[in-house]
Structures are given as C-alpha cells and as structure tokens.
Image (cartoon, rainbow, N blue to C red; front, side, top):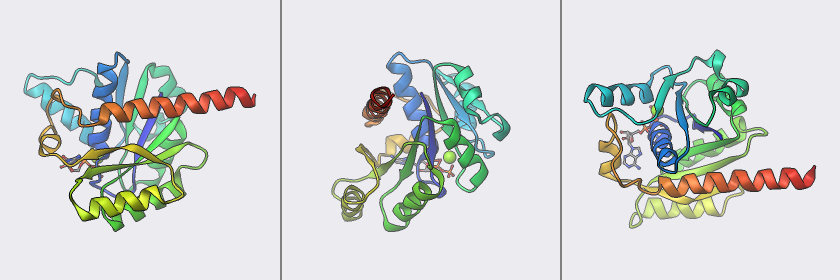
Length: 206
Ligand SMILES: Nc1ncnc2c1ncn2[C@@H]1O[C@H](COP(=O)(O)OP(=O)(O)OP(=O)(O)O)[C@@H](O)[C@H]1O
Ligand SMILES: [Mg+2]
C-alpha cells in the first residue's frame, strides 16, 4: 500500500506518524520504505541520527524528489511506501496524494489545527481516499475531547484510533522506536482494513 501523510499545517505530527507507522508495518512482517518528500528532510535526519548513534532504523528511509513522486515509482519500490510531506508545498502534497492509495491527514487537538486539516481534505485529497487522524490526544483535556467530538460529528471520515500525546513519542525523534507503538499498530490495522473494504467495493462494482 502507498500512504501519503499530509497536512498543510506544520508541526502536527506527520513525520512522527510516518516513522511509527513504518515501524508498525515492519513488526507486522510487511516490507516498508519511508519516502521523505519534505525538502527539510526530517525523516531522513531521524534515520541518519539513529544510524550515527549505532542504532539504525530497521527499515529504509529515502529522500525522494518531487519528480519521482509518482504512483509508478512507488509501486516499483515494492512493499509499503509511506510518504512524509512538507507542510507548505502544494505541489509536493498534491503529487504525494496522487501517488497514494490513501491519505492520512494528521491533526492535533485545537480548532486551528482541525480547520487546517479539513481544508487540507477539501483541497488536496480529490479522488484519493482520505481520513483524518487525531494525534497528541489527552483524554482528560477539554480541547482534546471537544476536538474529538467535532471530528466525529463532521462529514469527514476519521480514524477511530487516536494517538496520545506522550513524552516517549517526542523523545523517540532520532532514535529507534521502542516496544510501545502508542496506538500506531492499531492505525496500521485500520488503514489496511479501509483499503481492503475499498478494494472489495471496487471488485463488486466491476
Ligand atoms: N503523539 C505525540 N506526542 C508527543 N509529541 C509528539 C507527538 N507527535 C508528534 N510529537 C512531537 O511534535 C513535534 C512535531 O512533530 P512532527 O515533526 O512529527 O510534525 P510534522 O507535522 O512532521 O512537522 P513539519 O510540518 O515541521 O514537518 C515533534 O517535536 C514531535 O516529537
Ligand atoms: Mg515533518
């Protein structure tokens, strides 16, 4: 499967989501590559830093120029491809979404984040299936709760999985990911399930 992780807003958790999802996929026995399409190279830096600390990331992370961000190239890569995207580059975001089977639109709690996530859904996802993912969720926090309620009552599809805000997730930047995947393993299952359902619908349509 080819997954684009997007939001036009910065700092919402796109890179973190790519890297944790990749680790979840690897642990599920899937072959997986992270494509870092962000010119800032955050996933690449994460991976380079881990390698420098002699604890290399156990899947490959490669930088991909926007010209290579195509469905054909992603399919050719084989296995799963997770595309990390920059916040502020419409062309890269569009190309990543066009190459993908599904887009994960990451949002933190809070009105401004959610608004941007919904705008991203409206402007970029086109014919590619896309779902919102709430991250940095804290059960006891009012903002988190109201955000979750507003997402669930919106017309946008939303992943059931919420990713909690955890110091351990923040600390993992630049390192290999430890045992706890903080719900990203359930997100992987959900993505696989959504794609299976879409394929089944496609088959019965045809
Ligand atoms: N679930 C989480 N719990 C705690 N911290 C988190 C979580 N997800 C992300 N972070 C932290 O939030 C910051 C932004 O995350 P990340 O770099 O993944 O966002 P991004 O959307 O890729 O940012 P950019 O738009 O700059 O590429 C980082 O410091 C990261 O460690
Ligand atoms: Mg990033």
